[in-house]
Length: 326
Ligand code: P6P
Image (cartoon, rainbow, N blue to C red):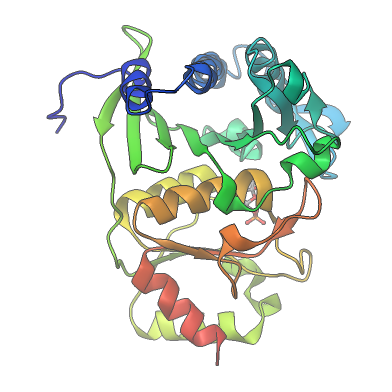
């Protein structure tokens, strides 16, 4: 039930900006650009077969994964929309080997934006929810190297969020002052506020993991799963991170991507998947770790670094961590 007055994402961001008298408005422009890109991608995703966007691009991306045509289309949309924002110094994408330098700090580049343009895109051909994940970092003009500039621990994020292209198109964002959810009203083409300062339940007996790989999980994860089965937990796994995390954020529970035989260091990317989601989860009252330390304290060494992930409701993450400690 929406009880708030009708507030668009643009209005909300300007309200937020007014909290900071010295704000230049440049940050608001970036969020506005991401919102525009999200609307364009939402339309293309909803007509993906009609637009011939299903199927493989025929290339392999930097991750060694076959690119889906929509991966490339979504990446181009975001690069073209954000590229025109004068306050952005560096853009980094899951789809691109190296970050793109748009301008130096001395030329007005105050922020870096990293993103996964279409996470879970392999699910597109079966019309399962997919998403865009983004994070906004400050640019450090004293670091001449774009890679080192963006390799910041998650604690330094200025803002983070995702767009879920699901049964509805949902835009979820935090700027460090709570988590706020918007839904796209196609009749007016605006994201409208549906939940302010979202807080996730402290517990919910639901875990989300690809159990097909469980024999390769470290023993602590196997102990946890055995315990969860005995406690009568439910399992929910979509295989699209944005959809799995959105459900966890709204309903509570715990999402896990442990080390596996194929990905002994974890599969999910630290900078533009784990960190933005960790920022949101912590702002909503949850916790996020790599199975040991707090995710947002990890110091990245490369743009496409991967990490194991245990994130969700505080009590549910604690249950996992207790079993990992043995
Ligand atoms: P698996 C999608 O490919 C993705 O990057 C995330 O969206 C998702 O959480 C994960 O990989 C699924 O991986 O190995 O379970 O198919």
